[in-house]
Amino acid sequence: MNQETDNASKFFPAGITDRERACFETGIKLGAIFHSILRLPVMNKREILERIQVGLEGAFECQPFVKDVNIKISFPRTGKYLKTDQYDYTLINEQMVEVDLDLEYNDTKIHAKIKWVPEMEYPLMYIHDISETGGIS
Image 1 (cartoon, rainbow, N blue to C red):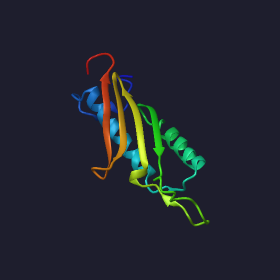
Image 2: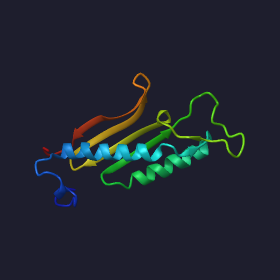
Image 3: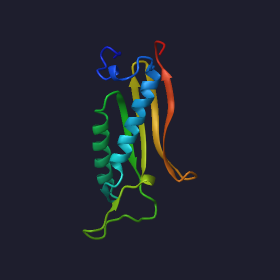
Image 4: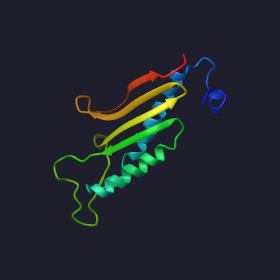
């Protein structure tokens, strides 16, 4: 793909590089993924977590330039969040979500993550790796 085949490129400044565009697209995807997951009702059962993860991964892999998405929802090891009656469930929170995202825009490849960072008490979204595979951007 190049700017001629990217219908949205005409809305970006002419001087924007593929690397800058890839970073922009990555940020949009990470924000969309993270804020779509938060507050989904869930309980600590492997089959339920797997269905949610697979469904979300499939949905976000449909977005432009996304090559792969891996979503992991984890529960604290306390044994909490086990359903004991019909009203017993929890909501996914910031500390439970980890995401790996691979995105490619022209010759720029990005591997990005969402990860809870305890010392920051924050769900950090960041670029883990960025590279160009071919031409100069």
